[in-house]
Image 1 (cartoon, one colour):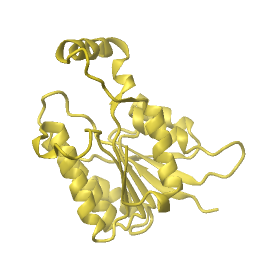
Image 2 (tube, rainbow, N blue to C red):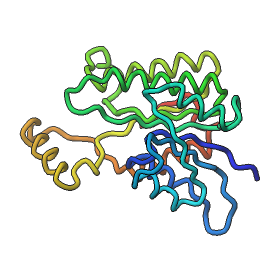
Image 3 (cartoon, one colour):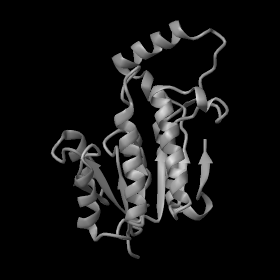
Image 4 (cartoon, rainbow, N blue to C red):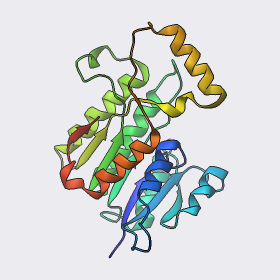
Amino acid sequence: MTERKILVTGATGKQGRALIASLQPVSDSPSEFQILALTRNVTSPAAIALKAFPNVRLVQGDLDKPESVKKVFDDEGGKGSIWGMFVILAFPGLGADASGEEKQGKLCADLALEYEVSHYVFSSVERGGEGDDKNAILDRKVKISIENHVKSLGEKGLKWTILRPGFFMENLEGFIGSIAFTVLQCGLKPDVKIEMVAANDIGRLGAAVLKNPERCTARYTP
């Protein structure tokens, strides 16, 4: 069995690690995927930790430097050499300008089309449907813009799936989590409900999409 190469951005983060863990071969069975973990620094502790997974190879690239990411595709063999992509983008921060995230997201989709990636998965954000998209701001507005760009490339042949996770449970961990909890407690009315999900579950869902792409092409997965 020839391993299919999957390029994962955000590989050292919670979602990326969860996806990689979910794409590990079972027992002694051969690996179905070879994972290319994209990182700006292949010597960082988080990147080195990924080497514990037998089917992971670290590749260096910076989403703010398009040529460095194109080099990854070229080094792997050019068009058609990377079968799939799983794209996770770093949250710019509360109230922060997200234009950099938008450029990164559109770059990844453009490269997927240019280099003939067979299946493209983008981890976006849940927002209760699309009815209020016109009023979105900052990071959410950018996520919507990236989604629309991905969909437009579908008309040119890109096969895609968009995941829309809600609020991550892991955001409530540790010291930062205690701050997040306080912000939510003070900023939301008592009867407001928040859709929550574990990063591990998004990893499992992403792995299921990549293992069954024909069932998940051009669909939204909440």
